[in-house]
Each structure stands twice: as C-alpha cells, then as structure tokens.
Image 1 (cartoon, rainbow over the protein chains, first blue to last red):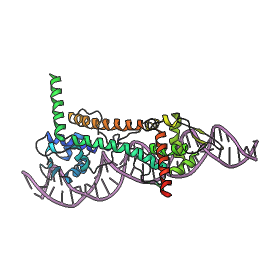
Image 2 (cartoon, rainbow over the protein chains, first blue to last red; image 1 turned 180 degrees about the vertical axis):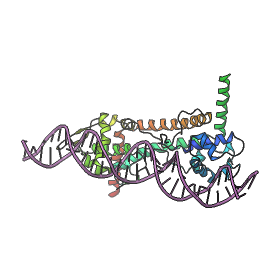
Image 3 (cartoon, chains in turn purple, green, orange, yellow; image 1 turned 30 degrees about the vertical axis):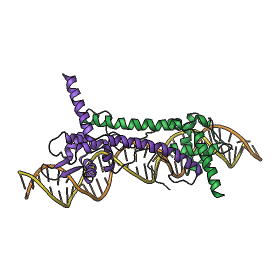
Image 4 (cartoon, chains in turn blue, green, brown, red; image 1 turned 90 degrees about the vertical axis):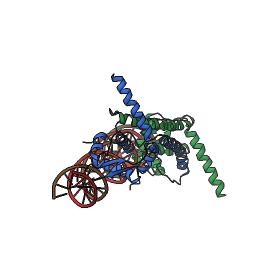
Length: 151
Length: 151
DNA sequence: CTTCATGTAACTATACATGTTACGATTCAG
DNA sequence: CTGAATCGTAACATGTATAGTTACATGAAG
C-alpha cells in the first residue's frame, strides 16, 4: 500500500504530529500519531527520533509511554524543526557540476546559485518567523470557524 | 560510471549547452555537447528536444547536422527555459497530503504553502530577469578576466 | 512476568533524472 | 545509390532518498 511519494514530507509530518500532541493531554504513542498522519509507526519513531536528539520532544517506553513535547511552543520555529531534521535539501533543481573548470558553466552556476540562495534565504526567514504557537493559534481559529459554520 | 545525482540539473545543462552553441559557429552535435556537459548524447537529445518543441532551438539530421539556437539570446530568460522543460518541481520538500480533512494538517499546509509560494515567486521572478544574453556577457567578462590574470 | 511501547536494524517499494543500448529515419558526400 | 553521419525515440538499467514493513531487543508499568 504505497501512496504517491515524490517529496520529503517530514517537516509537514512533524508539524502535524506536534500540533496533535499539543492538543492532547499526556503522551501519544507512535501508533496513535501514525494513525493521525496516515503513516507507519516505525517511520514516526524514526522521524520523531530526530526531534528527540534536538531536545524538542521526549519519549517514554513501556505502559502509558509515548511522545511528549519538551519545549515551549512559542520558542520552536519551523526553521528549528528543519534544522532538527538535518536540514534536508530544499530544492529539487540544481547545478550539474558544483565546481566546474569550464567558464561557461561557472557563469551558469553563478546565475543559478544567486537565484537559489535568495529564494532559500527568503524561505528560511519565513520558517524562522513561524512558531508552533502560531500554528496552534491558527488551528484554534479554524476550529472556531468550523463550529460557527455548523451552527 | 555514475556521478552523485540527487537533483534535476536539466536547467543547468541546457544553459551550459546553449552558451556553448552561442559561442560556436554552425550547428553542434549531441555528441559534442555531451562532451562539453559530461553527459550522454542521448540525454542531450532528450533534453534539447524539449527546447526544440518550445521553438528555442532547431535540429538538423545527417552530415554536418546538429543543434542551432533559433531565438534571440536577449529574449530568452531562464524562466522560459524552465517552462520549456515542463516546469519541473522546484522544491524537494512538500506537504504530506495536499487536501487534508484534518484541521491541524490544514493549518500546517497553509503555513508551509505560504512560505513555499513566496520563495517560488521570488525564484521565478529572478529567473525571468536573467536572459541568455546576460549569461553570455557574464561569460565574456570572466573570459577577459582570466586573460588579464594570465598576462 | 507479562504487556506495552520505544529503539533500531535490515530489507523492500516507489519515483524520477540520468545512463546505456539499439534501431529507425533523414541528410549529404562520393 | 551506397554508406556514413546525425537526430528521434523506445526500452531498459542505475542510483538515491524517503517511506513502508518486518523483526526483535530494550525498558517501564502494572
């Protein structure tokens, strides 16, 4: 049972998981988080393990164990989460050869690198501006809006 | 003989090829371009074929055949070349599920999409600002600089 | 001590650019 | 008209990273 997989969705996954954990009292198991995400529990452990190494979450084994957030939602930005995941490559496009001798290719690389570095800087700045608390607030707003629509 | 391949380098490749063609009198064969790029001639034909469909280059078969630029260098931007290649995905990172019912995931997607769309818009704007003529001029500058350094 | 849960290793599945081989189609030299 | 040169394209192989899966060891709670 494989879904269409073409891009790294770990940042999206951990955000989804962390917000569910923030809305939930007590630890959540990999099994439960996997159901929320539509993902395999082992993949959840694998990915959340990176956040554990960064000190953002903690895990407890055994009965009534699971994952807990061990940081203030207001202090954790998307930028930090991207870093905790090992700063995976942002772009699916790149230069053919990063250190060419050919002057033509050097000119091409310089032009492309300039554009990519600008776009990457903008993206990471935007990531730094958004915290888990911001996302939790946006979720709460959407939740209230849905209730209002239902009434 | 495989090199480290992780990203789509076709834009980089066609830029490299087009600048070599611009510096060269008469058509260039896929074989010759492949040597310039360190790429397979069949891959060159495959990729240049997309530019041919976009009307940016033409190919002639048989003796003394090969590829020619059929557009004004000043009018061809990186944006156009990206479009000619089929607008391949720019980001290697993305949402896990593009149309979730879960409000938590909707909030996550909204935040990520906002950042990605801004970065993509910036990148494509930068691409639109750079033409083949600009790159050719930058190459000429680098070429003159190297000569000056050698003397 | 049994059960639940994480920690991890090992293997598989998928997508996609790229590499490679093979052959047909076309153009030109002689 | 024959043959070499060259593009056009199909078919298949390769490499890589995330994600899925299976299996089992480790540790905590009742």
